[in-house]
Amino acid sequence: MHDFGLLLFVAAAFGGAGLALAGYVNARRPATDAMEYLGSLDGADELADEFQQHLALPFISRVIRPLSGRALQGVGRFTPANHLDGIHRQLLLAGLSASLRAEEFLTIQAVLTGLSTVGAIAWVVFSQPSARMGLLALIFAPVVSFLIPQAWLSRKVQDRQAAILKDLPDTLDLLAISVEAGMGFEGAIEIVCRHFQSPLADEFSRTLKEMELGLPRRDAFQNLKRRTEVPELSNFVLAITQADALGIPIGRVLKTQASEMRSKRRQWARERAGKLPVKILFPLIAFIFPAILVILLGPAGSSIKKAFSS
Image 1 (tube, helix red, strand yellow):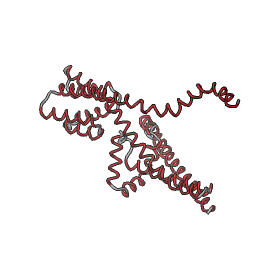
Image 2 (tube, rainbow, N blue to C red; image 1 turned 90 degrees about the vertical axis):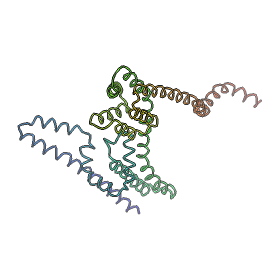
Image 3 (tube, helix red, strand yellow; image 1 turned 90 degrees about the horizontal axis):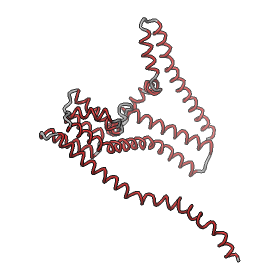
Image 4 (cartoon, rainbow, N blue to C red; image 1 turned 30 degrees about the vertical axis):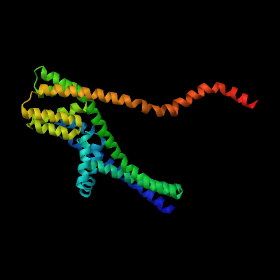
């Protein structure tokens, strides 16, 4: 068993070294060919600039993605379509759909799970722990490694939705002020995109670009609703859509929505303030009260000990 584990560890080490060497060769070979090609052309300066821009890309974009094309195709072929759609939806909500595909995320998840499984097997073989500890390592290491990327993605979605909810009242105020000042609705959205650097401003910028490309306002805002899934923003989209359909002035709707969002933000702040005493109670009991008792009763401890000893 010990020899088998050693052979497995050596094979895994040589396999990893081979993959690293292949990636290095494939990463270096285009550089050599490209430089030779650049030297034989008249417009070498422009091509050299383009080549330098290519080298400035992250290592994942230059090397890992080309090498993992077949692996991604295999992941997409053997993974259920509904699961891929769910991962893509989460990446869309997290704002990562432009930089990370669902197949790539699942590949990262599978690689982490495989590496943790190999590491757990190597630890069990070489350390020879008790049967219970070995079984726990073989079970929990793959499970935890499989769940960590999913937990990270869910956290990204929650953080982005919280950031959108936090910036929504100020954004609606600026929209209402801009429309009341005489600007059109699209112009007010452009003002928001210019003055805010936030996920909500990025989503409004994407919505504005969709409308500039000819997409109707209703469809563009439905896409905004689908990309965020924030209830308060969904209510705003519904109000704008209804106002556009019924001919209601946009300024009045924006003013009402901004006032309502300010009221909700005050209620949210009061709710957080009301929960604070309950949340701070446990740290006080665990960390603050023992230190206070030591400071107050410490000097009297010697006197009390002498009194009982006498």
